[in-house]
Image (cartoon, rainbow, N blue to C red; front, side, top):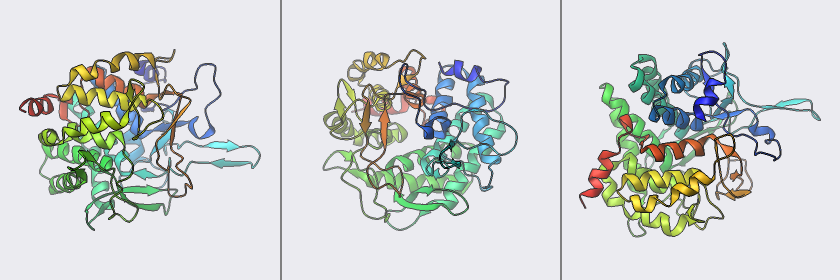
Length: 389
């Protein structure tokens, strides 16, 4: 399905894949999603293509990311936006998604999509590093360094617990700084910084990896056996109420040398996030989150718990839409308990019963046993550490 989407776009140049498709027989996509190619989803798709031995297709997505870094309509500082317009990337400034509102006769752009989240920048770098390893084309390594240099320069906040902040929300030239610090984002940054450190002696990479790792370690709550999702907006106060599956599980495969001490996170996730034979986004979930179920399958395999992963495969296969993509959830809608941005007045971040690029990519990574945080997709480091118990 992923190869077909890339191949359907003309030429051999850069592309960005749409993140969502309409459900068969369902309503058209909401206006804000019709053109949207989220960088996170595309990074996952590119890495999944690498895992499946499709480097040429992955390279076209990576070229789309490079275009986003180098041909922004405003920024020239090494960032990427959270989303771009789906399709083949034309010459000139890379188009951003948006929609025309006929009643008001105005063009609108989503404020989250035009902003820049730290974790999305790190995922873009992880894709470029994976493609560099498969092609040895120095452009991808250099652009990954540009991306992580932006994170290092623009998002580090030293007030304790020191870490990289959430990023920036809204339009240029003065997007709103988001001061909260995310466990998930710092896991992403740690993995990309550490990977870059394999290819050079730039002190920024070691320092960045150390900063991100210390924050992730500080988010571990040994009394509960879980990670908190990060801090509140002040960047200091722990946000201990919500539980997010990605923040709970990704550290185990991103920092495999510490995975043994964090094994109880698997039990926390099973007891709080399990639902309907799979896993939900948050604690006390209201439905299966396909993407997170794929994440759980991958981490369980990496930790030597294949028996627990095995029942998840039929559920994942059951989410396949006729197009080949997996539905984001079998439910009409599931909640995350999180807000899309600082102007949200309610917890308005949901997943819907729509074929989803990100869910598809995570299921592929799980089935391939490919760790997106490690060079070459290595799982052995994590499994060996776990098996020493």
